[in-house]
Length: 170
Image 1: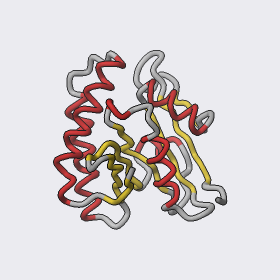
Image 2: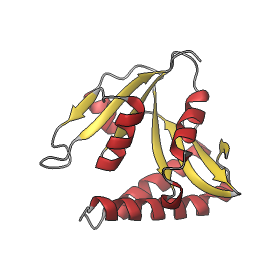
Image 3: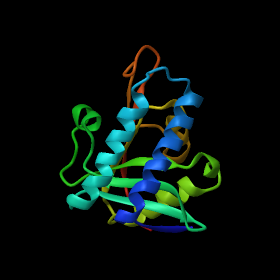
Image 4: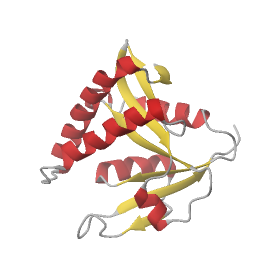
């Protein structure tokens, strides 16, 4: 697998990855919000554009056999995080983490997180949040219990979870 920052040539493949991943996720999670897919893809496309225009946003991809199979971003913490936690100056969020459905459970997500974290300085503080139940389950296995659970954030019985992590040595 190859980890690298995105280039302008990656925009179209990333849009396909977002549509494929989100469509699969929404189907598996049985969400019925008709606008969710379009809104999330629009937000992700904005993040991609921001990575070309904003020094505080970096988007990375993982390639396997020359094809983009995963993506993640380092960016300023989002509004949900900043509204509920006292965010340290300079802290970042690891966001926009998506892995192609046919590549999931094959180490791509772990590789992606390890590589993104390797770009951070020792002692750096970062946040990660998740609203989809399957994403929350994945991150709890990978990162442990969340720092904060916003009960019923997305509706009755639908929490939003936030992790705060300090990068340890090594």
